[in-house]
Image 1 (spheres, rainbow, N blue to C red):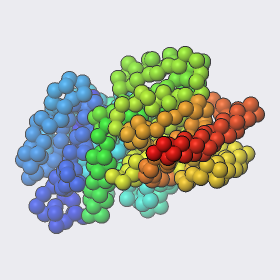
Image 2: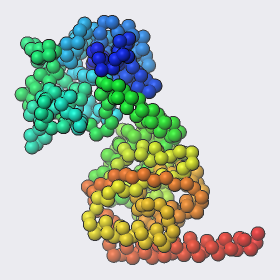
Image 3: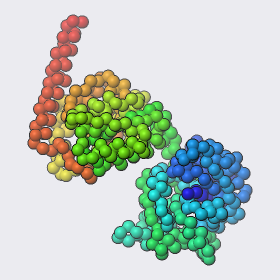
Image 4: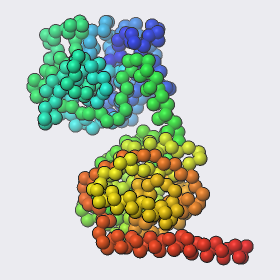
Length: 490
């Protein structure tokens, strides 16, 4: 598959800058706009790219991008190939794609409008493309500026309307498309639109008529660099992203897993995407606490595609506390993040924690913005929260939120012993007693989609209350006696 990046146009809304240069060469923080488009395609496995631009700006693109020497192919380990096409006048997106017809040849192609910046990973859609066309959609607040889709009850696109006066939805077609080779045949006889351009919507509607147009909805940040405001907004976003990555020298991500076969693979894959966006030095660890649902076999298979994945298998079930202790012991990087393997938290929100991590903070604790649980669990959870915070004198907002980022040196300075869920209370109290500094941030909480909670049974609740009593005695009575004895000898 080849890539085609359109980088022409007059950029009238970005004047006076575009009086002297192409808008795709304007800076977004520390890189020109065009770099983000090339990088997105390369990271998705595309290593042969044509950049289509205007004749007066071709030299400028060659000066910046050259033949692709600054980008390395994931397939070959060598530099990618970048070639150039000329669009003599802005005659529409379909016209820009047609210029690449001979370059694409018999291949399929990804068409990328170079003034779009996309944070979502698109490699899955590219790898799984088997013909027809795929358009990428994003919910927007101003759909009248875009091509807007109408879907039937089954989620199939039935119509795309270009810049409608009265939009039928807020799902806009953004500047990213995947086409099979028949796209060029569909251009034969294509009429120009009322504004004198050859619209890409015409081609997409042809695929709809054939029943061969699919869609993918983007969920992460997306920028359309068409105005001064969007230029500034994207620059600020990339600056903040860079600052976050500078805070992450190295990163351990781990998940305790017990019968989480239905969710653990997606958690690991999402963790890999997040970690790769932050640092090249990372590891992903799964502590399987003697699962019986096939989680172990799935994890072993996953190691073939995620070489950063380390597996720790407990021969016998050691409880939630035992799984966490194994995870902390296995982590080797300077920052340690963990959450549960049941996907009730979203790993992609890890940057929210990093946003709170500065030199004065040692641990960032998430708190549930809204708990997605049955009502009885919400009520029991609130009672538990307030009781535990009162009895143990804890200051954080949500002791029960297992979405935490901790500096490794903090973990090296505390000793944990709990083998049940009481480990969270033990850990937070000991970190507080150690004088380490906390920050907190709200995170999303989702319904469990696979398996069931292991906690809400009479025997487990009784065991937890018993363990909490022992923990309180150890933290407040025995520790007090030890401190008193130490002072006596001093």
